[in-house]
Structures are given as C-alpha cells and as structure tokens.
Image (cartoon, rainbow, N blue to C red):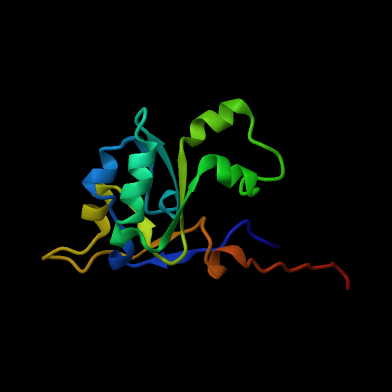
Length: 147
C-alpha cells in the first residue's frame, strides 16, 4: 500500500492571493487551494516575464515560495528524466512557483470562500503537491499473504 503524495493542512492564514501587480503581468495563473497553489504554473503576457520575476522577488507575501523559470524546472528534472513533449511543455507556461511551507496560492474567489473574514474564522483545507517533508516522504508498506 502506498500513495503518490502526502498532504498538508492549509490554514486560512496560509492562503496567499497574488498581488495585483503580479496578476497584471499574467495571461493565466494555475493556482488553487487543493493542490495547484502548492505548485503553481504562470503564463505571462507577451514580454512581461522579467517584470513578473522582479515583482515576485520583492513581494514579501511570496517569501515561502520558490519561483523557477519552466526551462530551469525541466533541466532540474522536476517533471521526470525526459523533457516534456512539446504539447505538454506549451501548457506549462513561463514559471513554476513551489511552496516550501504550508503557504498556498489561491484565487481571490477561494480566499473569500475559505479565508478569514469579520464573520468567519475561515476553513482549513487539505492540499498537496510541493516540497514539504509531509508531501514528499511517503510511507510504503508491503503485505505478503501468508508471510
């Protein structure tokens, strides 16, 4: 019995919405509380990659994330030993944001649904897919009938 990943608990305070200056650089951001926000893919508007990276690097709310250009993530083998096929590579966008803590990138809609407010303490969520030990160290058990 095994699993392909572990889980972390995302507290309402761990939900991070990208600031508007970063959103302005993006065509699309694949983020979300239940996994995607732990390993987010970012597709920049044409010519805005450097601006996005510079804005990311100085944004305090993103200090718990590593931002990698997709080509670096591919070179480091994060998608396996072989380069992604062209159709898959096109869907990956320009950058990969990886969480190193329980912090998780969420959409504004998810932040309002699950986050803290004046009338609610917020809702914890389960997530997976990044670099914490709880997500990467997966137990493996072998049962041998009759042993």
